[in-house]
Image (cartoon, rainbow, N blue to C red; front, side, top):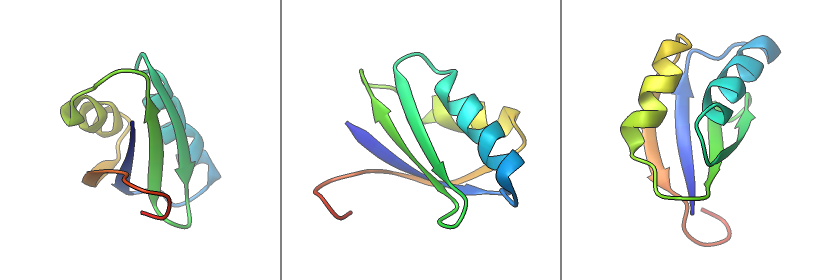
Length: 75
């Protein structure tokens, strides 16, 4: 399963690294953060509640705008 997380507060490469580290610290998560899109695509090995992502990113000083399940090839 993949989810797309819209993230507010990223301005530079350091922010991307910080957000990536926060998300990848969650067990069973592989995150790819995109500064241009201000979002992250996370691949999950098991079902993880959205609140876990929100908590991890807020602890790293970012704001989660939305979390959507990625469906299909181009969503």
